[in-house]
Amino acid sequence: MDYHAYGCAALLSLSLGIVPVAQAELDPISESAMGDITGQAFMKVENITGTSHEYTRMSLNMDVETRVNIDDVQIGEINGGTDFSAQHVALGHIARADGEQFNGVTYNEGDAIPFEAQKPYIELAEDGAGLAGFRMGFEQARGSVSSHTTSFSGDIGMKISDSGQVYDAMLFGGVGGAATNNRATHIGLAPNSPGQAAGCNVDGALANCAPLTNLRSIIVGEDTGAADGTVGFTDGFFIGFQRDDNMEWQSLDGANTISVGKGVFINLPTNMTIDLQKLTGPGVDRLRTHQVDMGTNLF
Image (cartoon, rainbow, N blue to C red; front, side):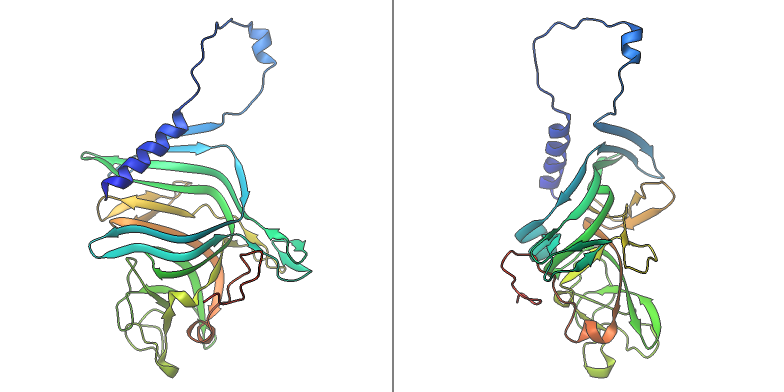
């Protein structure tokens, strides 16, 4: 892992821990007065023991609703490539028409539809050699993520429908390339899905994958089964930075582990199911992410 990542982790941790220094005298209060005081800590620190790592998780007791646009994101530029490369990244979007519904709320044209996040956290992982990795995420998150992504490392929890069946989506390292979670450029069906050629194929009727640039917007969240399409919060949205391969991050409830590799790993849980012909054809439209509507493609 790049030493700049370690410095970033240290800076973030230091920033969270800094409090103003003041000169003042502290006076004790009685137990009865203490009993009248209620409150909740702004920060929670947890020490967690894993199979081969010790974890320290620092969570902030705050909720965020935001809409953010970032022109260009490059993370993990090393060894002739980039772990994550994307342009025009956006969290949240804007309603294109009156009556647009999202998560049970009706919006008018031009209204901001925020990305919702609760209890942001930073987690450090250590082993016998020192700092093995860190990650940043949210205990609860849901909302839209839009981008023009050309390289992705991690997992996109999307499903793809084809011929009446639903399959897990897989990431690929280019046309003809194998499935990979590192510096992927395409997304599609597993190579062993019925009727599909091995590897990533983009040709005609045998097409089983498409460039990630076809996936212009996704919805982060979990399927609630609600008829109105309401998206549930997910606790799996995070970005991690690892020193070595075979690293494990625990789910926040401690019930499962997520195996990740060296470098950057972005976990994007989504409730979306995309038709294969749409994915390999025109692709998924981009949501409106600018006050001046740039259209469904942007490029």
